Length: 180
Ligand code: GDP
Ligand code: MG
Image 1 (cartoon, rainbow, N blue to C red):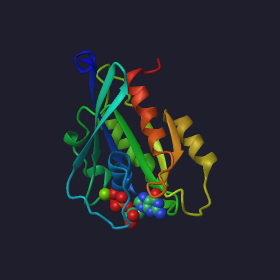
Image 2 (cartoon, protein in one colour):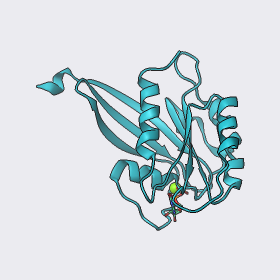
Image 3 (cartoon, protein in one colour):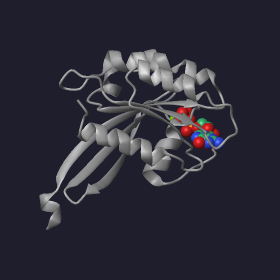
Image 4 (tube, rainbow, N blue to C red):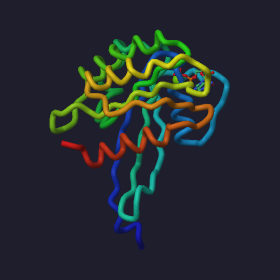
């Protein structure tokens, strides 16, 4: 009976970033609650669907789009980004050079996406593999977020299941109730 009264939302988020940073692992962790040490090379583009009973009145069908193959920001087409309402840009804390690609990923995303009202889609940055011992560069990341209209950033781990739910919830909240 309840189901008849639920508001249902389809949300599409894209997960982007360099090869090997953990995009597929983050999606698998979030959607299936699993982690695998293996490299699973995604071919082309792929999406996973998670149904979320958000609250008594709201059900969300969340599509998480994953890229594959040669993760080159320039090669992503409009089809991959089309109708996306949120994005996670992932880099690998153990390979700081993958943070250097974040501006290019963001630039490509901004060129190819916008909300129906013309605004930028909300973006979070995931500094992944936070289970490893690394020198973090929090100030650099915080500055980048402030200067580039990034919603938030999180140190995540797909392996240890750290802060992935939090990041997704933040993006979902922003998509449902954008802050003016
Ligand atoms: P993608 O190319 O961005 O999709 O990266 P994958 O999800 O395929 O992950 C690349 C490699 O990093 C795999 O061997 C994963 O097991 C590993 N990996 C992914 N996330 C984490 C993490 O949070 N911690 C650790 N230690 N390894 C991870
Ligand atoms: Mg992958």
